[in-house]
Figure 1 (cartoon, rainbow over the protein chains, first blue to last red):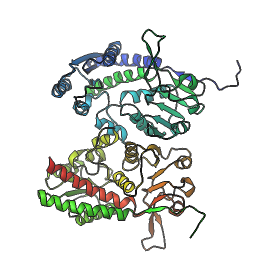
Figure 2: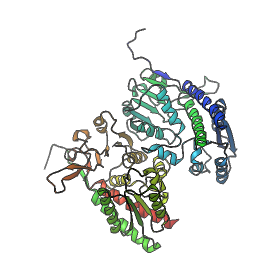
Figure 3: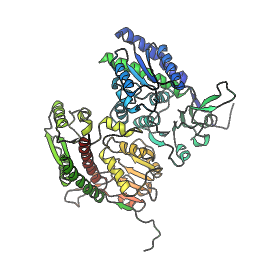
Figure 4: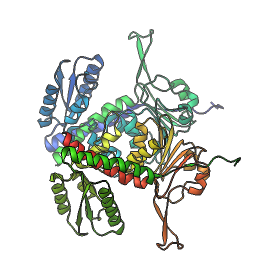
Length: 299
Length: 299
């Protein structure tokens, strides 16, 4: 049917792309196990009983099983001492069956997050949050052992959707250590012109409207409207916001930082939320753990 | 005299500001020497006989002397082995009179720069180039032991010239590990909206014209013209380009990345070249060495 309006955005289905990658990973896990008798193992440290943290851990455990990896859960009580958390990490550092170590964040307030994360052996830092890995990610001509999972998943989404980066103007909304900042640094390394927008930015809409690639990682439900988007832009929504929805039995639904309905009429590409970047993050965690196991046997 | 044109830019004299800071440092060096009998010492490792490197080293030595610090020069032959460079660094790491270690770059091609720099003890990395320092500089909520000298000097210039950063749109031209990238990261930490422009950027002039603060660190003589600058913007020129000038006995003169004559009619603030950011860089090296000595006695 002919139409005078722009064609609707191509929807990027992160779940489907993640499944494609997990199938590839499963084959690699099998082959590593056959060739070197080494099965990649991911250890997850969880402190306390936050419901969301427990959900994430069990999803990650399931994802490990699906690709044939081992997982180890170390559950510590809410009132555990810093010394005991550190002792657990050191034990995992020394365990030859553990190739990757993940500490589920946030930690209880009395535990020094920086101290805990810096205890993880650099060879097992599959989350890529060690400052040494982060420094190498930032610096030109250096490569970290592991890239943080969400930014790496984001790059994979772009590349498997055929979206080029070089010479494009990318605007990243948000500057967290986990998403906004490393995504910006990776886009810069891939030769995009990069602008980082955040809570102190004046006229964010005007700046975002310049972007060929928009990365929304502000944690503000539906913040980015249709008229903030340049027609044809690639819009990657990393938002994961819970909003009340009495029509659902759960009482809530998850929406992104981008107004999906409006954006779908303007953008060239648009990710699903949920089902966009989220599944890619878990998948990259599996990939990093596999890489850690490969690094070990190749040493 | 009344005039219909904009007032000329305030000229930022880095040499004068640097002298002001060096006077402060000299007093602190004296006081540390009196209170703890500790005299800050900077060791400089130079490989080969590049003329520019030798000039930099002798200027840095002179700057040390002026504020009452010690300096130690380790000059190695052009054909030195990597192992011998590393051995020199380790000796300096262990020397209690040495608080800061600087390796003059570039190194000869056969010497692995990354390997050499990563040997410098993190407590003596006064250049701030160790990836661990760099990672902490980049990450929100982390602080490196030392900030790289040029970016830190740049921030001091802004602050001592009364130029605020928060909420401003800063455009950084260039993305080197030494200037562009760390300057961008520090501006972001100071709550500027940051755009990083580089050789792959389309329409750099259009993007630069949006900036409240322009940092020119591209290494392209007179690249930024007057009409690339928003009236009233602060223009910090980190360029240091040698251009032929037969009218001088040296045969050359040094110009920045900004067309000074044109910019001075449009910008709100403008740094001198030479005599802008350059003297601040040396000064921050002295400050980092003093800080390293203070960190040692306060341990």
